Length: 195
Image (cartoon, rainbow, N blue to C red; front, side, top):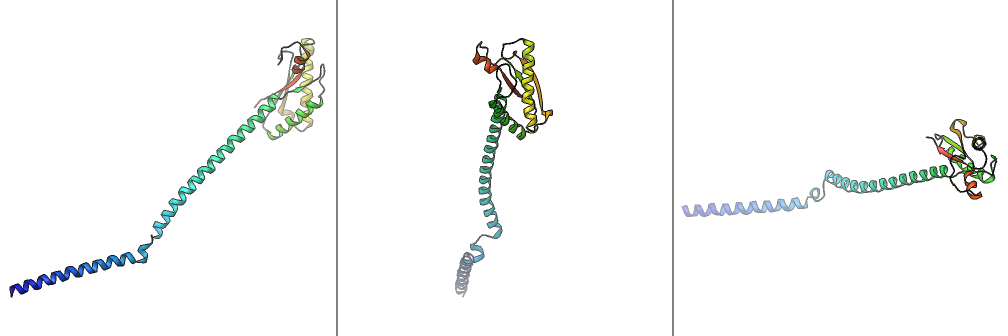
C-alpha cells in the first residue's frame, strides 16, 4: 500500500506541475494578447513623441538660428559697406569755387538719405583745396566749401547739430601731383563720422 501511496503522490505531483505549467502558459499567452499591453502607455507614447519632436524641433531650431546668424552677419556687412561708402565718397568742386556742381548734389542727396537712416550719427565735413593760392586763401576757401555742403544737408532736413565743419585748405592732399588731374582730386569736401 505504501507503493500505491507513493505512486499516487507522484501522480498528483505530476498533475500539479502540468496544471501549473498550463496555467502559466495560458497567463503568458493572455498577457501577450492583452490589448493594453500591446501598445505603449500614454506616458511612454508621450515621451517617445516628445523625444522625436524634440530632436526635430531642435535641429529645425538650429537651422533657424544659423539662418538668423547669417542674416545678422549680412546686415552688419551691408551696414558697414554703406558706412564706408558714406565716408569714402567725396564731393568735388571747380577751381576757386565753393558752389555745388550737379555731381556733388547727387552725392550729397545719397549722403542725406544715409544720415536719415542713421539718425544718431554726427558728421565732420572737411573742406580741402588744391595747392594753388595762398595758405590763408585756401583755408577760407576750404571753409566755404564745407559750409556749402553743410547748408545743402540742413536744407534737406538734417539737423545742424549733427554737422560740423573744418577747413584744411591745401594741408591734406589726396594726390601730391602737380597737374590738373591731381588738383581736381584735392578740391573736395570729405566726411568723417564722429560717433
